[in-house]
Length: 362
Ligand SMILES: Cc1ncc(COP(=O)(O)O)c(C=O)c1O
Image (cartoon, rainbow, N blue to C red):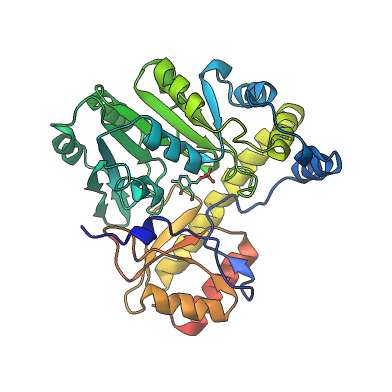
């Protein structure tokens, strides 16, 4: 299947100045808590940008591990999940990469450069949702050797599909002689999802990627972590990352906020999940009532397929009303009629639906 190389590095969040409402970036729509923003200001006032951060990130690692109830020895901090993916593909030196598509474009970006053989398994579509077929997966991995990597985002971008714990355990079990990377960048924001973090004890071949930038709505600060009990992988990734991969402002902010505002942040996450669930349902029903195909999602966004209008035309119309959405037409297995819409707060969501209605987008 042909995929334009530039399209794997095509993401939301880029638009002209006349855009007032961004539905293209998939993050927590609540925005960062005020106390987190106060810590950013504090870090700037302290002129921390003049210092190198501690390259072992001892305090930050402790704060992250306490917040997520994990062993700090099994964590490598990363500059967002995007860096984690990059490090894993460049440093673990796989020959075969197995992905389920459509998915986050970065997974396939490095495959040509690193001469990795990409095996793309399509998500299957039924009624209004996407799912993974275990048999297709079994067939795809039949002749993959020990160095193979299975990379799966859960919930998935852009379909919003979610793999439950039972199927996830089967996938990991079937891949025992490979490394399984589960990208849980959106899982903190999902009310009904369970993380595989606790399966790490059971499976030495399991690596979990988590993002804090999406959870706390600060994608500009860039922070996440890799979690695994596999010593060789931990050591390799830790050595491969550049020493100061989390900047000193981000390191300061998260070392403090995760410790000092732990309870507030748990509440923030819990209410974010609830709001996202309610708003996603509102958007789902509104688009369905307009006769647009909309898929069930566990993530803070929805995938839409129009019947009459191509993505490029929809984007032009919406841009004229100050709205930007993510063109999803170039993802493998999607069509020129697909776009992705992030879940925002009610006033913005209502405005989006109103523009759709008044412009007659179908
Ligand atoms: C599946 C997936 N993983 C990772 C990322 C990037 O996460 P981060 O901001 O933590 O690098 C994205 C961004 O949209 C994504 O969709």
